[in-house]
Image 1: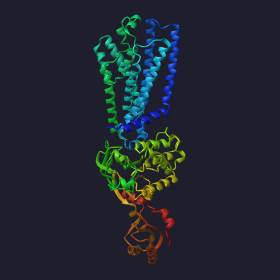
Image 2: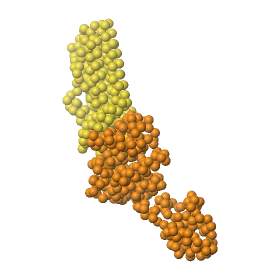
Image 3: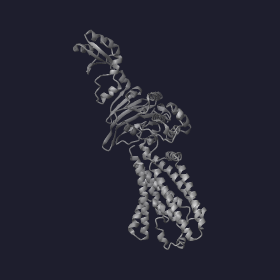
Image 4: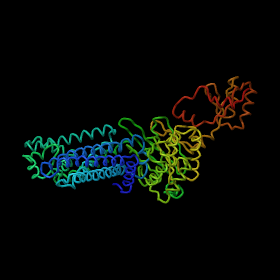
Length: 286
Length: 327
């Protein structure tokens, strides 16, 4: 249905815009600041109490999860605010009229916008995520159980929210679309928490609600994956005083590695949502 | 894509052809059945009052909107055909370009989107900037441009790659009189090189000056299609004359069909050279001549009459003071 050439043209245009409008510089600057602050903060912690035993390790891991949650939130907001003005305002301002009169399909414009912003978000998530993990390791010597996957999960979460924001932007004004995506993100996280509570207390209703919410918007699957990868091993949890390690795993700031089925669903969800976005854009009157 | 009408247009004699093109937005009928033919190499004016469906028609032609029913062809391809769009340049009525880009970068983007070979970009961009007189601001960001400069940039974008068909939707809406004159000159040069120009405008004098043919649309339908040279070849004279009514009518009827238009007597079909003779004959029969005005129907008059708008009571005032013959 779509050619690669026009998609790449639009993706490159989107990247140039992000660069020219200083989005990339802003993200790079903030990342550098946060990494330095993280290193400084953890260095002070390690100075006060060397990270040698399970209690300290548990403490560091908890702060790391909190950091990751903050980063996940920032990344989600960046994805929403980058994605929600991607299509609608360009139609309303007339910017897309001149472009779409060229030999390019609407689907190619949408996919190009998505690809360009996806590159920015994934690069930001990976670079900032690994730098954070490295800063903590450098300052404290603590390395999470699975240090490679958390930034990948966060990048996945950003892609899901970017997709949602872009799909909404084909029909809904950017402010309203952005607000809807933020609320949806918050609800998905809350549903994940409730689902976890359902698991812990064996409540089918809560478990089911969490499951349905994840189907509708699977961003929380990715966050739980990230948190799970940062959670210490059961030995450390138990030795660190978490009497019921399995219960801990269902707290709002923890998680488990998602199953392959859930990861596949995330990919299917992104593809399906983009297809819906293309359909909505094709039917929109310019 | 750069060959102009001579090479690409040999196959098809028409640049645009539509049959009963209809567009509805819910209950609103924007186009009720547009049927028209635009021959290749002509400057075609598309006229109509506000809300007649002009911009909707343009969007349908360019594939920016889908018709509810009906069909059409542009440069041999069906409406919205991607391949045909390579040979079309378009200036939208609502023009805006990426504010963070320079004029040169906007043009380079459109060279890429139009799939022009990269080696042609630089000469194409320079030529387009030259044509619209934007060379000095080529490296300025478009967000610093005035509306008129943005419209010039839009024209440059539309002219990239020497398209076979250029669609201009109100191309002078933001331009000053000098800019409008430049656009008329530009349209003339496009015609000279065989490019078809589809000019959507409500500025009748502008259309009258540059177009070979016009279609007048109202309520989403073409109510008339006429050649401009036919319009200007029409002859006649308007006289404000008092005196014995029967005698005046009798004399005038000897020179062509007559009719009354308010206080004016109109004699259709009379050659300009015969007017002094008519005036002399009227005076000889006791008529008093207050004004004599050539009665070539202007596009505006034709437009008004087709839309059923009554002509102004006073007649063509500016002409009567300048060109009338008192008695």
